[in-house]
Length: 239
Image 1: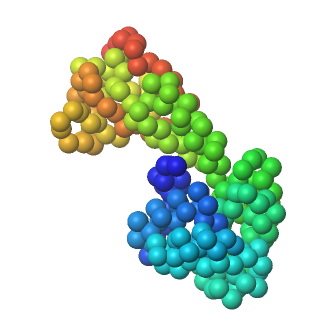
Image 2: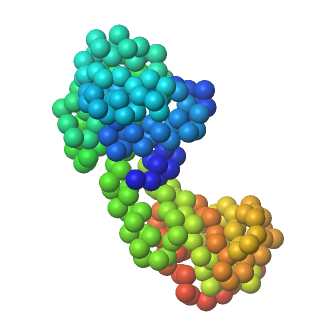
């Protein structure tokens, strides 16, 4: 599982400590990435073996029933500004955990949902953010298999960032001349050329065949732009 695909969604201050409930594939992946990013992480799981496996990698790893609000209170869960519920194999436990966190007043609750109904119920009972990792991964793989994009990350609001080969239509032009933002409604963030350092994009940045573009915009706009990879129709001149 790609840690970055999910961890980039969690915009926490570097000083924040995070509670992660459920140390399965998703929860442990996110927990490990948060530790790498410098966060203190307390992991909770009802499975003793998982807790033992992660005890030396997290700030704290505790075997407990997270659906019990009194247990969470005793563990100091209310002191955490952010909590992630990664329980995927027990819908009841996931939702009861969200309810318990809501009762404790945790202000930023994230939930891994296995389907739309799970996510909708979680939001109604107090979850602030819902993540659908299987759906997100499936869409990302589809984009990569198509060969149009080298990497693709979509955020909850339909905004995306992608890395792709510069389409033929912008070869041997500056970004200003290619008018990518004006004509395709996406922003070129940066350019990576073989054997050269990454450079942030400017209007005068010159695009050559083989360049990689880092672009941002709506998912629909990026998909349309990526589809033009082999098109060489030049942009109309300004004026």
